[in-house]
Length: 335
View (spheres, helix red, strand yellow):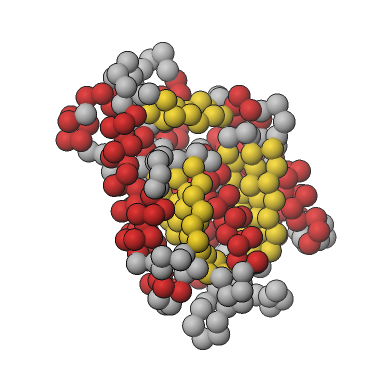
């Protein structure tokens, strides 16, 4: 465990669960005891509250009333049941009863990118649609005692953390009211055949179980996925290659980022936003990519990132690669 933490590149993480909570639920530490019901009771309250805190910040910055939200896309790996946390979140935020809700469960680390893809489809098909995307994770759903025979359990306890992120997506910004950050230009999803056993996420009697193969970094071949995504736009050829773009990579772990950097020949600063988020928060599953996008935005504001075009990428069970081409708002050739 100490070795994993030292090599992870993670300096700190945040958690909803406490020593007191664990002490009052001894089944959380004993994999031989059923604990799923207890975990779901905890996350039923924790996930919507965490999600609401993130969404309230996004809505405040958006500067329009919550009642103008037409769609809600909610993503989590930490909850289950109907009515789900999307219903609780809508009530906490005061969204209209007619808001159209879509819930995504158990998409792993690609959950946030998948939610953005769904929201982009909704925003593009609805007149004046404003889609609130919220991803929230409480890792108590999979927390457990260390087991020397279960390496994956050690990985979960050393890498994953809690967090929530939110963003609002729409087409046709209202002048002088809405200030776009990124334009979502193209989206794609690809499955890497034969890699299904490498990563899986399953609910069981003892909570959420993970399998993360130690061979995962070697299995990830993202260059073709990225090339296919940007080729129709002519971005890679003749414009400085991959280093001519900004990158918002989901930081599944330090080794994953290292493999991306090597495969694409990226300069070290290209993944600085992803590495900082990993160091400050750990892997928050679906919520992490929103933190990375916010860090890219911050770096653009201070002049550390100047590229007009970029790529958002996340890897999930399957193995599934979610890719999105972004254009920074306010660029010279803004579309």
